[in-house]
Image (cartoon, rainbow, N blue to C red; front, side):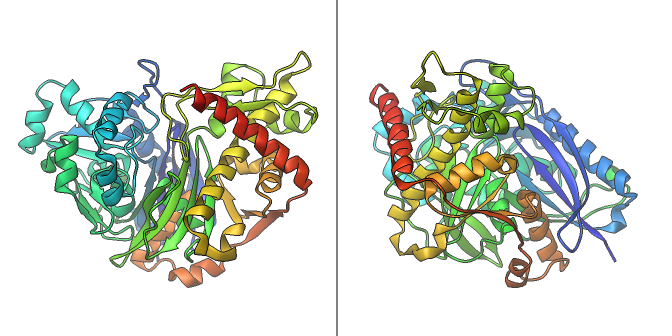
Length: 498
């Protein structure tokens, strides 16, 4: 009997592969950093071959670590950085342009023009999204226009588009399967989340040929098998979901009203709204949370572009710390009398503002401001932005009841006790950190394991979720109100000048 699920987690800054046991614990892990390229201000790219190389190396490494072979793997599950866009040759699997990363803002002017022309209502109604360079559609069009002859080759079916999941699936299967799942499709601005199909009106609007597109399947589905040459024998691929939706599954947020928030490079909060897609009035995204057995479950999502990236800025930009963990200690030493506010709009402001042209700023600096206050400001900025998202969710779906007052968290930043406590303080609500914080990987593994019978149905899986620590609000109401007011004033200053 197979002992593991092989989970591939292809993220923004690294690729990872993990072997997951039947009890949800991690048996082996391998990770490689993924090089980033910044060809111009606001532009972020990755080499497709770097993505493929790091994933393949990690998969082979974890198998070697565990002394496992293909027969020990029940299935592969894939989770990925979303919206990052690739176009490749079907004949060779080689990309025709670097991958354009989700953080890239080069198509902001195109998006602004389409919004000014009145197309925003159509896009929101069909996709649940706002017209923004964050999503894939304008990235695809840019590649087709930037690479000579690409548009013609796309129209004749020589080229394929995919988000990272689809590209990896194509390469893993030796070019035999060009598919994606419903969660990743829902992030392209080309997919009707109500009908579950690519939309011809949107394809025309964004200038994307239908021949480029992958087939859309459930998150737990038959996605083919790996090329035997990769691992010595075929391994079935049975699960796929974008990283934030995978984290929602890994956090067992299967009931309407449950909320999870993941803190990695960015921060992404999702509220399960069940079978009902809730249209946001506060500039959140309506998206597919997961699709199992042909049934779509929806979510309201708020996306923050900079979370852990703010700590990276302290380390790599300011050289104020040597390791991310040092920010926790520094922040706890900050002078509470100083109202230093960082608005980390390094690549624009995400939800609920959606201001791609705004850039970051520091407010409240004094001669006494030092590294401790800057560290606290960076960590607090993540908490302030989460408060904005949760407030918008409550306003969009007031019928959610009390279930949304507890936030389940995961991701690298959740290891910071200071940040999690400050998050609970500013939310005025409990924050639950699970025992297993690798929830994105666990979600990808679960989807694959559900499809092949390795894992139980969702209700039984949810019973296995375990709390490591609950952070309870301790900040006085007056102090909380003052800190939130300072944050909103700072954001107001930037937006007012946009």
